[in-house]
Every structure is written in structure tokens, then in C-alpha cells.
Image (cartoon, rainbow, N blue to C red; front, side):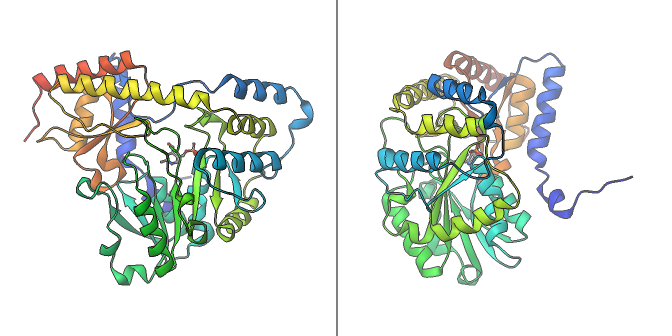
Length: 393
Ligand SMILES: Cc1ncc(COP(=O)(O)O)c(C=O)c1O
């Protein structure tokens, strides 16, 4: 039998990521020791009390059934976390929806809300599932360019009216991936007003809510007046508590939107393993001391990488947040040519910016998921590479 993937799956084939994975494999097969800065999976451990809780409940054999949905304890823990961390009031009864990672929500929300012919505004560059979720739903994309000259914020007044008439949802993410910029309260207020005027559901992806550096505050979209009327916010334990493999996250905010997503999800999954939910409760209700230590570690890593790159003559803007550095590449290279040459000739894997959308051209994304010594070593390899390699044109 010759099986041909559906048109939707074919349109999703992320050729750059596939090509990148192939290049990495080829380099490793040739004996190159690749320092991998391409994947944003946290390398640090979850807090001890999270692991202890997971172990404790895993030993209880009565806890292996379907949970079907988020436990009340989990909903209340999210309510506690939002009050403590962002001074936002969330009703644990109907303003929280548990998710199998924020990816679960991002992948399924459009199917729950969008019909063919509806438009979704997505950031360009942006995290790929934003677009794929809309593709799964059969909706249409309008990319909002995130450019340095506008502080990586979309220009809402430049979106054509004929698109806005058909737009049902918009996705934003501050700090985001790959663009690590932060948004101001003023921008979020503008988004609320824009969404009310055009009757658009706002989706704020806040997966990196606690990885914000240099003493800057973390700003929840939900902290802006009127946000709950028009929007929801995805958050996750993956990056904040290094629980990415546990697959647990949540959405908060507009209860009608959450109800629609919950209805869709109730048809496709049966809830998260009880011990994981209880481990998440332990994380969300802790004293959060580990978060400060983690931020310091990421700052140290970013500074080590940037200092090394500066020695290489490559001056890169300081990322304010996340676990990434979004770096404008040296002149003359295309993103892909530069990233692929780095793997082959320097043994450093980074993601070419155009993997995240057309506006990512001219950038690469580096994940600082290695200790600072390794990042210094990566920067030194890049220095040697830049000394001996020129762009092809
Ligand atoms: C911007 C962004 N949103 C969402 C996710 C999904 O995270 P999770 O499903 O683990 O919560 C990621 C993962 O890398 C991400 O970078």
C-alpha cells in the first residue's frame, strides 16, 4: 500500500526542521561533536518537592485510572499562582482549563473555534504550532510581522479591514519563541481595545512567564483590565518548573472560550495522570525560591554566550527573557546558509530564523539549554568559524 499523507499534513511538513535534523545527524555520523542549541527543552531538574510528590502518588495503585479533567486541587493551585505571581484574580471553578501542555491548547483551540474562511492573526516569526493549529482547523492565516524597529510588536493599525472582518482570533506571545521581547502594559491595553472593537478572541501564549531576566517584572495579559472579556492565556509547567516531559499546562481567562475548548478536549483525551497533577499542585503552591535561582542561571548562560560571541566580533542583542537568544546574523549570510554551515563546520546546532516565518530571515535562534561552560565553548567554535568562513555571495 502506498500511503499518501493528507493535504493538511503535507502542508505542515516543516522542511527546515527536517533539514536541520538531517544535517545534525550527518555531522554526528561524520564524528563531529555537535553542541546542540537547537531544541528548547529545559536541561535543569524540577524542584525536589515536585519529584517527591510524583513518586509518592505513583506508589498509590488506586491512582492509575483516567482523571478525565483537572482536579479541583489543580484549579485552586492555578488560582493561587496567578494571585501570587501576577496579582490576577482567577476563578478556579470556570476560569481555568487544564491542558496536556500548552501545546495541547495551541494545537486544538482553532479547531474548537475556527471554520474554513475564518482568519487568525499570528505573529511572524512565531512558534510553529500557531500556524499548524489553524491549518488543522482549515482556517486562514494572516501573519503579523514582528520587527525590531517596532520593538517586535505587531502594528495592529496596519492589518487590512477586509482581513479584520473575517478574523476570529489572534495569537500573541510575550515573551515569546523565537522572539524573546517583552510587551508593555500599554500594548496589552491596545490589544484589548482592538479585540473589543473587532470582536476577536485574543490568545496570549505565556509559556515563558517566569523566565524573565535582569529583574524585569512578568506581565500577564490577564492583569490588564478587560482582558478576560476578550482573551485567554496559556501557561505551562514545562519551562517554569522544568516539567516539560510531564505534559501539563493550563489556560486561564474567558470562560466561554475555555468551555468551547474543554468540550472539544473531552472528546479526544481523558485527563492527566493523577500523580502528575499533584506534582503540578506542589510546584504551583511552593515558595517559588527555585524560580529566582533558575533565572540567575539563565542570565549567567546568556551572558556567557553573548560575551563569547562578542569576542568573535558578533555583537548580539541581550535577550530579556525565555531560554533563547534571538540573534541577528552577520551580514552576507542567509539564515539557512549560516545555520547549516555552523553545524557542518563549527559543530554548533542553531535554528535558522526563517523556520519560524518569513520575517525570521536574517536571524538564528539559540537555545541556552547547556551549562555556561558549554556555551562559552560553542561561542569559541563560532569565533573560529567566522575567522575562516565567508558567506557564499
Ligand atoms: C512559545 C511556546 N509556547 C508553547 C510551547 C509548548 O510548551 P508545553 O506544551 O510544553 O507547555 C512551547 C514549547 O517550546 C513554546 O516555546
